[in-house]
Length: 286
Figure 1: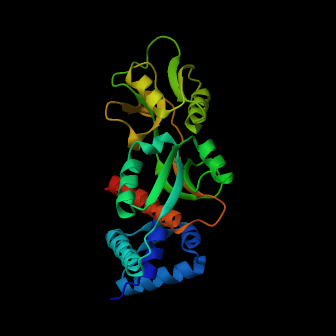
Figure 2: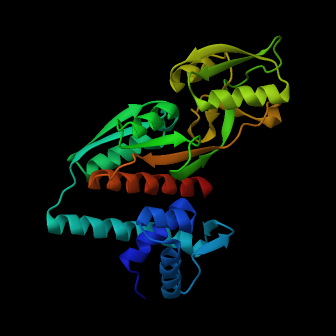
Figure 3: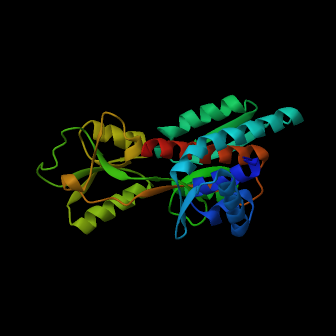
């Protein structure tokens, strides 16, 4: 059995994007070329690796078994190439992300990348999605994460939103539902729309420029706030339709790069981001 690194890299791209078309854009190949490489890899393995459901590609059990090995093989290949060519990655990466995504995975991801590439400096900018997209368009950032309000980019994660509250928060208290919101955050717009469509009276009790502020308001029992269930702090609970609150739309984490050729360091960091989100998504499904 032969597992060419080129095929494995394409396999990882399809697994990350769940799309042959988007994977092609990531590995700079046409959709048909991606399909050919995946088919040849499946022939080598002797098992199907993806379930095709319309335009979506989902990993089969065999594909899930292969994913960690494929990631390890590709990483070892790239490390070997770098060591033999003495071409250590270096430079500065200007990375932007909403604070929502800096609370769980990103600190571990940045630490791992720094350990593997000590000559690369990652400048972290905690901005709203609007500011991140503007920074990319204006050349102030090289790469960034946004909440799915913009065309293009690569979806690296899909999250469920809940209403974060202090355990035992009384939803039946007199008056309007107190709400804590982050200034300039799309979650604010989604929450207000959901409450309005449900006909549930509310009042904006607390406004903060960062997610930590609204979570502190919820933690103190002052209000509820829209939050990502996956990164919800342990001292808060997630409320939803079972508790009489309206459903919030799902949130997609979308990876964007600036509209210009990127450095080898940025390209490597992009692959590191995609792989880390994919690995966390797999862990959450187990």
